[in-house]
Length: 300
Image 1 (cartoon, rainbow, N blue to C red):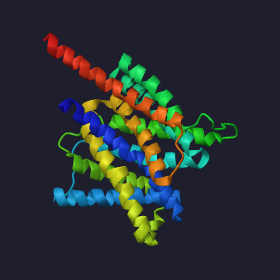
Image 2: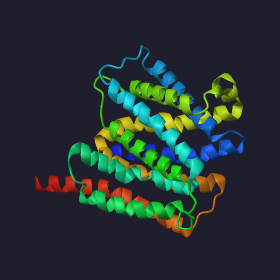
Image 3: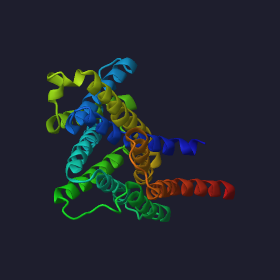
């Protein structure tokens, strides 16, 4: 049973990310900009991390010897939010999701380079299946690609690379630093980055503390900062960067399902098929590992 705990934590973390696009759209529907919604996510996310730290640790935070890892994790966390937000300006939402989901193979490639290895057969099979499922689930088969601004492609690919790098940085543990302290530092660095590129003025003009934006900020901060960072920090070192990238594909099915349930968006049978294909593809590496471990136990 323990073999499934860490992969499930990665899946749950990715699933929480899948709710963000719908919440941002709801915030936009109430008159806020996407930049204000994203800024509220990171600012309140940091404040939540600070409260959790003060309640549970009750001491001054220390970086110990992992400053470089924490800095990179915070930078990549913030950068992903920034460039993906820019991609949504130039790309249809469905196509932006497809671009972001290139992190599945980019993350595996980075892991292979860092570990100086070739991808395993289950990983290759899984990536192929995930690519097919992503195209179907995102509903981009009928999207006209002519006339799309080249900046959309660049920002979309940059978001995928940033997310992949963040995933691989999370494989590095910091000796002597617990998860709560790491969450505090990472969320702070990400919030500082967002403040430079999004809408930090929502703090001093009072808009952040209006009832509705505060609600969205709390929801976005919890599901987009606290839960995923906390779970990724715990689980990714146990699962590995490559498999974590593949398991994180769960974000897309959740994004599609939540948008259908909350925003009442249409869902085609091709998208349903795509979601099922993604679920099959992302389960292959974990199943292969389980079967390999079971075979070792029976032969030993």
